Image (cartoon, rainbow, N blue to C red; front, side):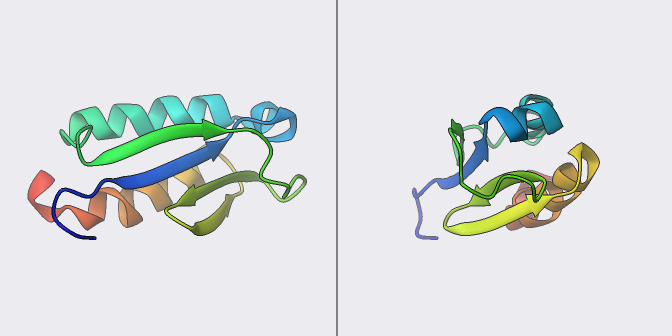
Length: 90
């Protein structure tokens, strides 16, 4: 990532993912971004169907497709792969 470029995180909010907890995932991701003061470095957005229904909660970091088995799995991956990109965020 170049300086000033924002990391994009997109969470599916289609019916299947919504039922599995994607709304709570977005809320937890947002809390983590605020806790680590990264709102100006990470764009968090929702997207309708990512067409991977049935696999879990679907989301992306940039162009990287991810599927989490549940909310805690998503938060663990987000913490490692997003928050971990910014070690100075502490």
